[in-house]
Length: 132
Image 1 (spheres, rainbow, N blue to C red):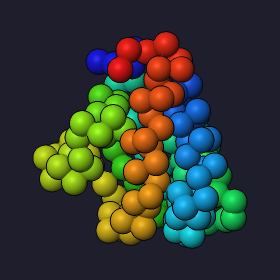
Image 2: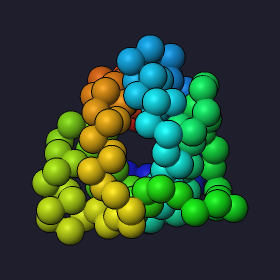
Image 3: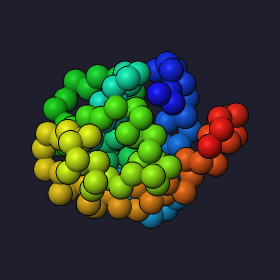
């Protein structure tokens, strides 16, 4: 397992999301989605909330008081492989490594965000001293 603690995962996820939202296309995709997305990461546990209902979009961590439009559940190892580009979201979803509640097809609007994550993630890992 790559991440041993929720703090390690949160540190990397916060940096990654902050940089992703600096990309105009990725930021516009999120804020234009009109969706509240909750990503429930297991092993170690972390809840990431992406709120694209406002401009600019916002990101928070922890449980939401509102029901999300899309809820995604996966292990941190799956997320790690997706962000590294070693596992395609489609393959993880159809292989049962990702669970969803809500309209998963609405997440297709966020394609630029996923591409930006794959581009930035290895860079951020190296900056933080992780071996890629």
